[in-house]
Length: 86
Image (cartoon, rainbow, N blue to C red; front, side, top):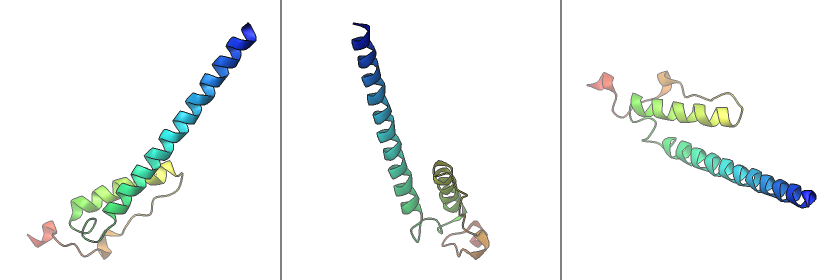
């Protein structure tokens, strides 16, 4: 009887682990999708605020993937609508 209960508990734990892994994969897909959208021309280089949004998303993805973030150099970006232009 105890063996059956332990087996049921182990199965439940394995199912929870599988569910957590699926959620992590979904989170990674969502973060990479958002990063891809923010990387488009006219998004990250629209103004300094949007560049900051891209930098933040790059930071999140890099931390999730356990790597160093690859930031864009603000000095090399030609902004479409910069606060400096106003």
